[in-house]
Amino acid sequence: MKGLIFTELLSMMETTFGEDFTEELIDGLDLQSGAAYTSVGNYDYNEALTIVTKLSEKSGMPVNALVKAFGKHLLKAFYKFHPEYFNKTSALDFLGSVDNFIHVEVKKLNPETELPKLNFKIIDDKVTKIEYSSTKPFADLAEGLIEETFEHYNESFTISSEGDDPFQRTFVLTRQVA
Image 1: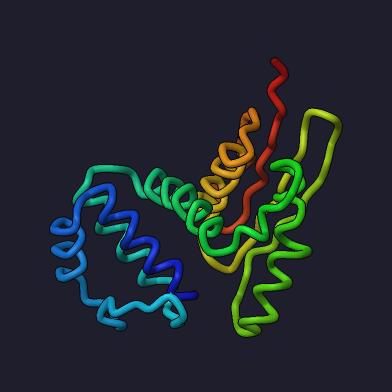
Image 2: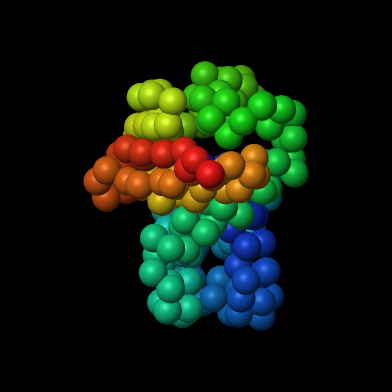
């Protein structure tokens, strides 16, 4: 997993819980990398799970809520680093471009990267489904990314999930009409 994910996780923790809290939490973990993350490095995704699990224990927040909140934080970071990917006319245009454009570009730069698969299906003028599947248990992260996408484009959608499998989930996106 790319180091940017780890550096942004620590950034979110510092912003939300403070630097001392974050440092103490990380120092108390036995991580193979020693938590010496760089944005361009590659690290075992299990380290992120270890960090979030410990964060849940120390903060009292459920793991899935933390991972979803991180997804929202991560979308803002992606925008900061790659605003060119967001030059779409709507949230659905952007979400529809993730698998067939953004992930293609990421693979060009990092061929070894394992990316999730997003199957985008427009059901009708109000409902769209995104089928998420991954070798990593980050469906809650995907949900946070999707939620923040609607915030970014200032669009009103409700998001519901079909299933609770962290590796595979279908998100039902329903446009809210004013």
